[in-house]
Image 1 (cartoon, rainbow, N blue to C red):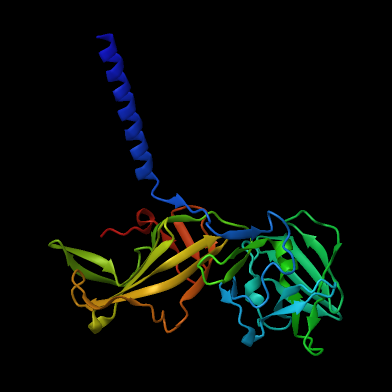
Image 2: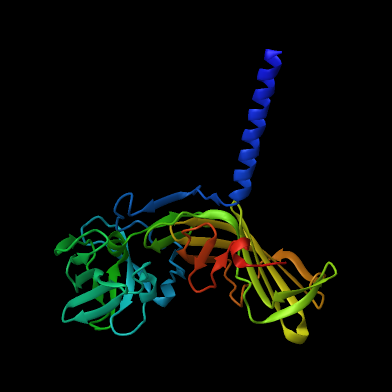
Length: 350
């Protein structure tokens, strides 16, 4: 009898543990992502001048490096090492060059200017003017001055030797090339190498975020709404809805559904592979589907899982999204896009 009681108690304890485990799994639908590819961050060690191979296909934040645009280039090191250093073109007068690629969370975009022979790049925290990062590059000089860096607690000027000096274009006071690795070592950042199997490297600025797999969507508070029938009940739905599902196996589905007046409902589905590291969500699109019709619940397929052709007129199959915020698994904020939420936070009723 005692043995039966003990066994019954053990079974009850096991069932209770399994029930608790199931409850935890139900309450935590998002799983952290762990990179399955080579990465490097400035938190691990300082980046080297040739941290990206010369001529490699690469992105900096959400912008692709294109040699034809002359916004980025590789320059030969002047220290005899023959290493090729990735240089970034900044505009000291207007918001040109690759200035927007120097965005840093909390600080935003830098102020860039030139005084005589010095190129100044300064980031200031809008909420605290004493919180700043200030760098000086003497044109033609083989060094960089760090005047102040609140991220590192630096308040006194220090000098960093550079294998490639900052230089302007034919004496132009506006456009200047500076070594990207040196900036990243001060403001933070990193790179993921070839995560999608096409040889591309993805570089980001700022601190790293923890990524998650899960499903996110836009909020359901649109003032433009349409009444539709669902299961015999009239439901008010937003005329625009967007969702993104990131799966632990590295695949994604992106859905865009919108109402075009007399044209009815249109639903587009994109599928592909993705990788997330630091602040870059790299997405390689492989297929697309399109459905349309007047009946919200019964759209007609125009094409289903067809080879990817374009997204919003852009025929590139790889996109790099810069993640502004992913502090909570329930909120995903992508730069230049609407913020995405978990279904619970989005407020969607249908």
